[in-house]
Image 1 (tube, rainbow, N blue to C red):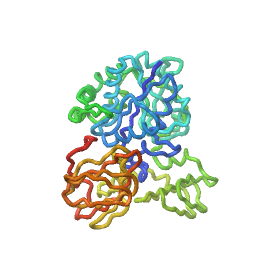
Image 2 (cartoon, rainbow, N blue to C red; image 1 turned 120 degrees about the vertical axis):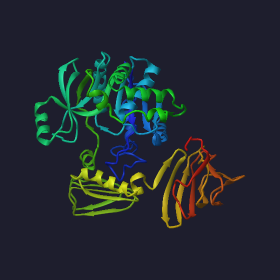
Image 3 (cartoon, rainbow, N blue to C red; image 1 turned 180 degrees about the horizontal axis):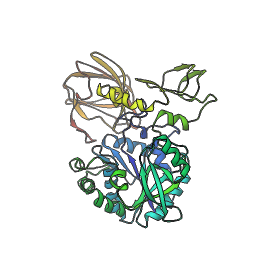
Image 4 (cartoon, rainbow, N blue to C red; image 1 turned 45 degrees about the vertical axis):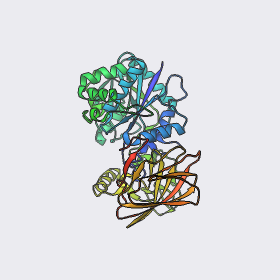
Length: 470
């Protein structure tokens, strides 16, 4: 049996701020292994002959990150579908199912999984998927139901009904995030499972149920795929995709269909929806502390402490999350995870850039890192990957002074084209068309000093761009 994974990597959650941000959400970060959550998700189903290469669905601003992450891990996907705007999981799944129905036929078995969860027992997950595939082949849409480890109130629950196969059961009902007393009753009854947001179904079943139950979603997604721009990434058509309601697959299909089934599974699963959840599954010292980075802790108990580069010193603390990045620090009780979302929303309303991105911002050509900023000037480090180039552009409000640290830069400045090597520099005046390219086989690093009355990233007028950005 050939099972095709669909990896949903379009999320932009900030429940793990300040590490997870809009420009670098948690699926591209590593927490419990050396790999990002995205790469670990794909690797769980790699190297098993029953699973084929995946299709990954990504937000528009993250498509190049998906491609880069998978390439670095030696993974060749079937396709990367880029969602032009966020419309939740139903249209993303519809477009992916349509793509695979065309490529592999209506009977292709699809396994849909989020890219930002942790699974401790990958073989158990694969067994559950294969068990669910038997019911999917009979026309059911099968969910992976996680056997509850506790009376959790933060998850949706699935009540399992009558048997379909040796492993799958019909879904009797869904229950959204119960109160504690109800969750405790569910735990004792043994029929209730956590909803992990994983689905197994035939491509044709998904398409037919979506056309019947949410035709506006199906028509918009299929039209977006039909008019997509193809290349390294399949960019869904924005005008068509925008016509879809923003709705989850659970609400659009699973809570309405008569074909819902569930396979119980014990796979060491967590959606790491809070710092407390991450501490629970992380390695801990003898005092119950989860520590990562340059941290000195004395007389601290049951804390999560992380530092991205700078020394963090913690003394006599209990049950706190302390997370320090280069531009922001979070200090909060581990049991107040719900307050973090409100704080992030408030900071976003204030226009704080720390919500959107880190000081190090990834681009299709490499990355830039804001080292220092003050009124009238800013200092950045640019890394341009081998064979890549920034767009041909100009700035209306700032000049730039480039100093090459390592590698070789091919510089375009108006009608000039010249080469800079380590230690050499040039000035880009206000209004000059310019571009830096890396013609070499190693990374190109440049220090960029910006001078001007406005230094925002939107002061860019692009004339040519190989990545098709506006």
